[in-house]
Length: 143
Image 1 (cartoon, one colour):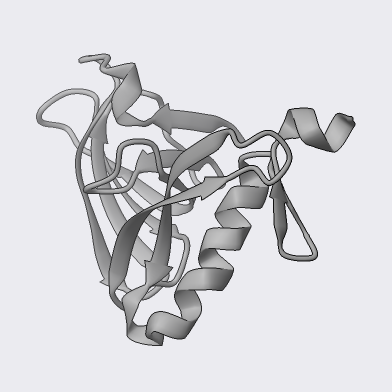
Image 2 (tube, one colour):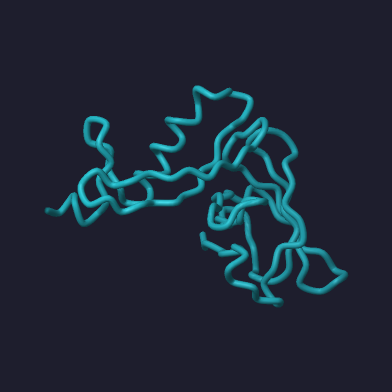
């Protein structure tokens, strides 16, 4: 089981994705080049329309194509979005005033009520903490 990084920031022509599309919520078809992908591997894929968000896809089955050489088609399992929405929000540290400009993904089909919990989860991923309604950056958490 290996982890393959196909995020946009790595721009390597021998190790690229051609297509990533949703077949159904939680099921994806990914086409790419290079990387010796096998069933059981994990793919890191940039979310379309995002600067820095990615998702982890678990490869269920792979078909290696003869032409062009090195190309493969994989069916993967991943996050379940009916309608993916990417939002940009900002939050200020209540300790030092430092500003965090961040992106988060949410299922738009869940409505506006799902945005705040998704944003809080993303803030936690970035190392910030929500302490009784006060947001604290890493430096202020240590102090």
